[in-house]
Length: 345
Image (cartoon, rainbow, N blue to C red):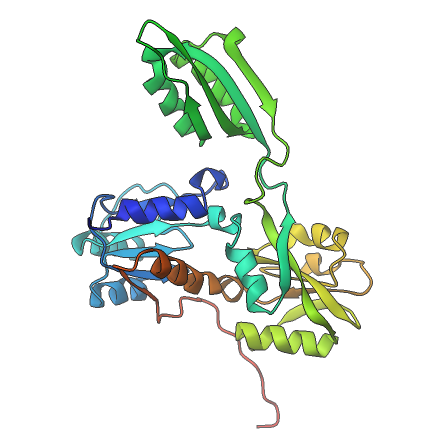
């Protein structure tokens, strides 16, 4: 049986469930026919015009990207701007696009854990396990309302949904599902108004530590403590970055927290966890003032902290689909350049 885009999507969803994406995000199959056959895949961080041309040249069937090609609502798709031209070109060449963004940020073995491995950390775990507060919802419904209820649950990114099978349509059945807490109000309202679920038949329970496979950021240790200079050198070399912006100072660095992309919001979590340093990207000026002794806050760049996930995607897909050729892009999609002055030259 041929592998399809849907097979790839299902594999990625098992690793990084779409229901764990943040509310603003847009993940999953964004371009293409889910039933289309896949023989060649390119993995990448960003979908850019150059990358699309690379995909066309390589006769690629599917691009698996971290950052979504379609993020905001589209009013039109025409070849009159870069965004429209890319989508137009992809469709013309039957190339699909699948994005795994904040769901892959939050996944075990995802963006931050790969970053932690890349700089040489060991004993890696999530920095913040309170990424999603889940509730279990249990309710009774007529058997013939199952399809409608399932659609409403899907709209609210419910997971682990189960329906106890009825004997016939005259019998009621019970449904249970896991839902993020901020979705509960809307979900219950729609179940009552659109699926005629009685309020008295709905029960909700807050879940504690419902899964250890979802979190944000990562924390680990070096085998041996490093001096500040050795630490900065190792991070720069392992991530292939010419410069690192940082604040603070630490004589010995062994326990380190990281967050791929823009993760400065986790600085307090890193400090609470006893980290000697925290590595992320996109740090604003005022965020460098941590007022924490023996602590380094370092910005290695957004692209630089996330690009290792492209290779990880390639490795995981190659391991799981031996009938598909999977490669990582040769295009550097980072829009930022760094100029390092050499005053002696």
